[in-house]
Length: 425
Image 1: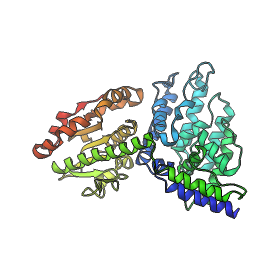
Image 2: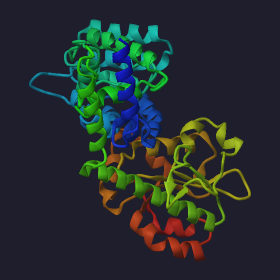
Image 3: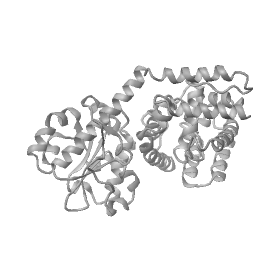
Image 4: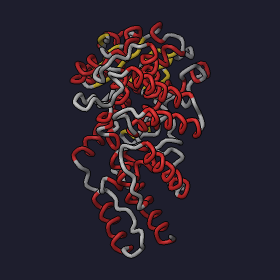
């Protein structure tokens, strides 16, 4: 046991140090943290529509698709998460679109888990949905529950199951709630054993299992007979991380572009005389060798920090605050390549939880010029019905790049920003 424990610890340490492994590329990814509240808010919409009988009988275009798309977009470990929810007409699965009773049971599961706070209550809700025997509705739903209770429900997919089996020698099978609950208990035990290296958030150990199941990292030999070969394989895995795949290279480029645009908005806000707030989880990110939050507010004013939805507001990419009052003049969400969903939800929290920012300026989605049609199509979904009330402006990268220097030199207030932005939806 001692050799296995030592080998597992060595595995975790090397894995955490790999910039392309799921720990650094997903678990520590700022967008993962930002998505939690928006996914929870989206699930509230799903439940409300089911209760009101307005959810409909199709996945495409539904509020559930919007939420699951936001999860699947975290492609480091959730690529393909929407497959379990896609309607398969020949098999009539998952049977939550054409069967109203099953649909309500699914809504009760999500609502019950969202409202409870204890492990026992969550398990009772899972056991209740299992008793319903809803065809095609299995443990993939755990990916929704993870974003409600990340310390109690691990993420779930084929690779995570495979990684768990390799690491523990278990034989967990897909598609069964009892099998999932048994794996969950084992994951909690593993996480407790290596808690000093992992996290209270089960996403960390989920990411480790995913990388083992994806053959990125080997599981330690359980009989201790192949320790030298295991150490060699660990070194090979770490060496392979030095050469980024094209997809990983694009991801790094996306992060750099996102930070660059945040820096434009930061500098422009200062030039126009505003106090600037950089998203709490982006403040320390380096751009051009300096933290993005340098010269910006260290804390939001109490009137904003204590308002409803303040935790989400703290994660808005860039806020401009008036110099003479603790009021938001403008809010900017930079959506380089990810879904606009979480950004719009944060703007809703700002608008509904605080004095209306539109009275002084507005809310802006900042994104590549080529994304405009895609963004407008997303905003046409029922899940974004309230967005039209916000009068959000579309601010393309190209317009911002072309005019930011002139605005910083000759601009006054938000007049020039509004002039280069276009209304949404």
